[in-house]
Length: 624
Image (cartoon, rainbow, N blue to C red; front, side, top):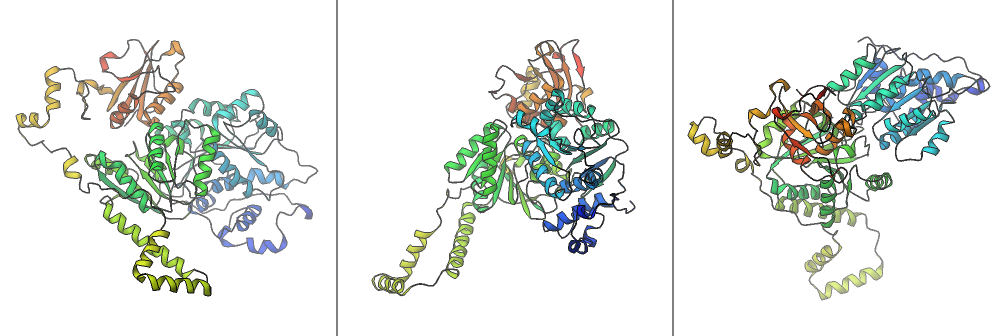
């Protein structure tokens, strides 16, 4: 690709309207920020920036005038500022006008759509300081969980840059409070996450409310098939800009895996958290119930842990994240949905209590650490019999995991003792000078007691209070947990090793066993390319639609939307396909009672049970 600087044409300003002071101009003309518009350069230098990140430089180096972009880079790599560079030409035209002729547009010129409130606030904050030196360019955000009336009043000031979540943006468009007719730059940030959350119809409605000649940019750490389909529909000859190789996990992250038995999962987690003491640690679980239960269990064992899940009210969610940012809570237990869009600085460790369902999820999870050039660690806990599957999943994210033994109780205790000694020695080195009275009292103690015993007692008394004691774990679970390889055994011996298979052949029903092995081949539709069919007791007579169904299915099964295939909507029932690789975990999760929709039941069905005459809707690409 040919190098080409970002050209910004700014009309001549009055002397009173100069955006840079004379003594700053020399500093800003550094090669590190070549191609960045002058007022943005001043903002970067004012914030202490000395260079650009890879994705920021890639945006400037690309020949991008007038082109739609697909920006791909690891999380925490400065994509928000890269977006600011992209939007700069249209916004600097507003700032270049004199105060007398400066008229605010009827609506935003740049519109940024994000999946969560937290991400909206973060993007707004970043763009605010970046454009602070450009007159007339205000930045605002509208999100769910905030006052609609207050947002409408702020929209009345017509901010040129608006950041928002899909549902709230569409509400303001439909009420007439938001005019998108002048949008020239539209950004879908973390577009894959928004589709996973069921916002497809909202995004389409917002896009249709903007001018057809706009520039549309997609930003994501990964670009799965449904995002590529969205790009084909709404982008014109998009240019790919990659800060890092597409879909590759952050190179600043150390990826560690521990093979274990299910019974050892909590013990392993405790030992890892004890070793990570003093770091912000983000623990991922599969369901909201697990988040609450695990956070409570960790709190009872002395860890400052809080849960983060989709069921939290916005005010509670805000308080939880504030406690995690400040360090009041050192451990945050979160679901994938709740953690989307989080940008918490200095998360030292991410722990996956179970393998994620796909490589994209792993990339997004692990990307919560190792941000902004800092080192981080991603720790995966996996059953020993799933080692090969986990390695294959991670290979798609170009991750080479380091399998290690689980830290034992003895090794953790030894590490904690060393840490305590270092802390004591550091405190002694930094101790203030003692008084004569203190020395006299110390000499009196030494005359009455043995010096070594006295010091040991004082160390124990002033030692930092321990959390729970390290736990004993099985450090070699692989042989006992891995299924035996019986493929070379005679048929009769194979039946003895796999009684569940013999029983399926005898009864002929092909029902799923509790042992977690594959179902009968009759349960698969050969046309599906490796998918299992499920049924939910919700049809179009009761208001079911593809978008609503997709949201419920993904929430109930805690599954990514790219694992869902064709959806067949009937009058009272809907059947849908789930990729084989995710079907076991999906079925286990949807069996659990759901407090939000207690009357909706999801079960696995055979192909023959698909309702005749049902309307098939391909809501997304089929699983591969």
